[in-house]
Structure formats: structure tokens, C-alpha cells
Length: 151
Image (cartoon, rainbow, N blue to C red; front, side):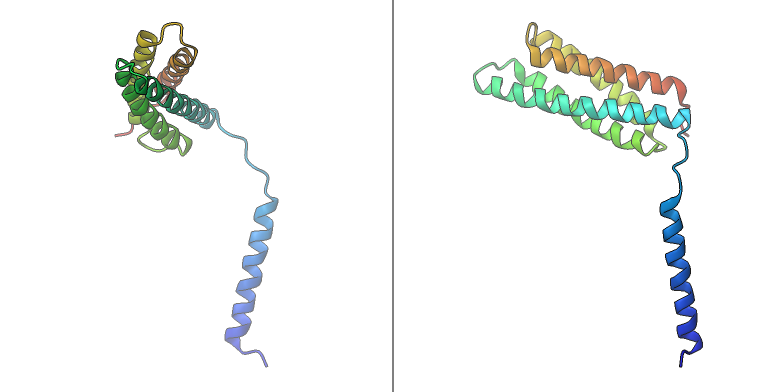
């Protein structure tokens, strides 16, 4: 014989399963233009982060071969990669501090691009990193022009 408690538990379980089943059938809602802007910025920041990491590794190899002037570029790329990673994370979730991290990311990308351009003239890896940084800087500044700072 089923008691009230077991009957209620069975009812709640059935309701939960029904809710889960219908949740899977929902169609995703179209993204708002504001949301698409955050997604675009997050992707570009993520791309830049990976390019800066690759360039830092490359600079490390050059440094090991005695090219000491690449130390500054290596450090710039590592710091820029960290800021790009933070910007990608915060903008992907549309965090309230996205404006803060994007402002820092844009500045870091400008500096990193300058380092790569200065020390890597004619070098494909460093040129690619500088280009990616300039793209990321522009994306962050564009996003900042559309988003009001949170206070």
C-alpha cells in the first residue's frame, strides 16, 4: 500500500522528469545584439590569448638561443595573454566588470603589439601576434563604446 509520503514523492519525481523532458525541447531564444557583441569580443580575446601564448613560447626559444632582447616581449605576451583570458571569460558571461577588464585588455594588447612590432620586424610569428593584438584591442574598444561602465 502506498502512503501519502511515497505518493507525494512519486508525484514530485514525475513532475521533475516532465520538466526536464520539456526543457530539452525548448528552442533557443535568438541572441540580442548586445549579447552578440559580448560573444564576438570574447572570441577575439580568446584567439588573442592563444596567439600571445604561442608568441611567448617562441620568444622563450629565442631567448634560450641568446636573443636577450626578447625577454621583454616574452613578458609582454604572457601578461597580455592573461588579460585576454580574463577578458574572454568575463565578456563570455557578460559579467558586470567586463568594461574594466576590456579597458585593461585593450591597453595590454596595444603595448604587446608594440613590443612584437619593435622586436620582430620581418618575423612571421611576432607579426601574427601583433596583428592579433591589434584586432583584440579594436574589439575591446568597440565593445567599450557600446557598454556603459557598471558602478
